[in-house]
Amino acid sequence: MPDTKLILIEGIPGSGKSATARTVYEQLEKRGKRPKLFLEGDWNHPADFESVACLNKTEYGDLLAQFPQHKAFLAQHARQEDGEVFFSYRRMQHECATCAPNALFEALARFEIYELPAQKHQDLLRRRWEKFATQAAREESTYVFECCFLQNPITTLLARHNLAEKQIYHHILALARSIQPLQPKLVYLARRDVSATLEAVRRERPQEWADFVTWYLTGQAYGQARGLEGFEGVKTFYAARQKLETDWLRTLPISKIIITDDKDWETRHRQMLSLLEQ
Image (cartoon, rainbow, N blue to C red; front, side, top):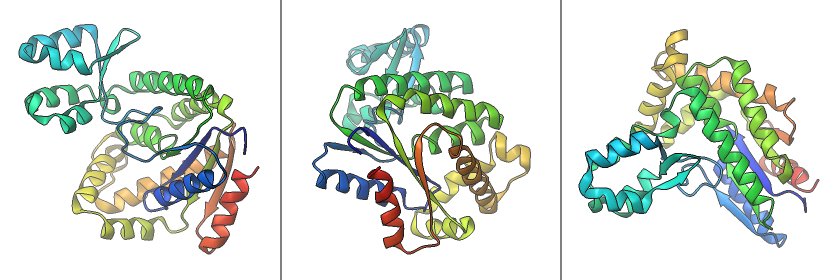
């Protein structure tokens, strides 16, 4: 594992991604590495976008005109790159909710990168991963990412946009190629019983989680095109997504292991360590 600078943990909700990512992080620490762990929802993620808005110069100008008294606040938090302006708007709101009205944060949220048209979304993600790979290749650290390589882009492009599977695959393939200099390894946690896994997650998490994923997966392009409804529709989506991911992993140019839950934890733990030691 000495040349590996990126370890990816993937799987459907309830598959154990967070716990596995923490375990990998701990193993790297024990081996004297310099691991950096980024779990789902981290606002500081170096390769993914989490609650980040992207505006072009015209849109930014319109925003300044709409909130002229907050120009200094916006300028302080703006990150300009490749002719576009980026704002980590949820972090801004969390760190200084009284610095600006909710209307400003709501205006920024309309430019959320995961809500942009599919092609724009893909372009931004590819650029982000390419820049991360270039930077990480110069460092001594090993990064551990949960769910951002497969889960986030596939869920967005499939559920929200109902993009053709071939197009989504080529997007993931482009991401895989961009991180090749990091000699990445991927741990995929597959579940035999998707329905039971999701029912367990629904019992453990707030009702708001079930309400949101039900809307996101059944109320947008993919779900509407297939007549998906309710939490059963959520199960249908995740079963389809897991199949896509495990099928695609067999052809992606990345070192990987697919760990199923038909063995005890110790066996699965050894399987994961075997990949890390290669």
